[in-house]
Amino acid sequence: QVQLAESGGGLVQTGGSLRLSCAASGSIFSRSDMGWYLQAPGKQRELVAAITTGGIMNYADSVKGRFTISRDNAKNTVYLQMNNLKPEDTAVYYCNGQVVVGIYRSYWGQGTQVTVSS
Image (tube, rainbow, N blue to C red; front, side, top):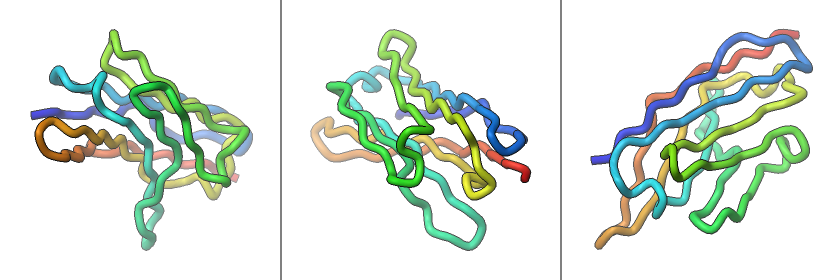
């Protein structure tokens, strides 16, 4: 069973930066496509950024040019560098992994709160 543990959230002022980390247990991280999602109060969870096993990255339009996703397979960790943060970025950020090992599996972390003050 894979477990994900996010860290790096917190309170930051508008224009500030944060770096989120998501550490994965287990041996299938390198075979997993990874992503970061956010969920604001009263809203659905939505994709922020994703990175495939081959390193192809995809971003939501709202974060292009400000956020960067990366992964380190040697450390079983995926990162989200968030720059020029805005109040509308305030949400709980979740790490997600998707892999096919016989069957399709999707696994989630517990989330980390990011709050951007104006």
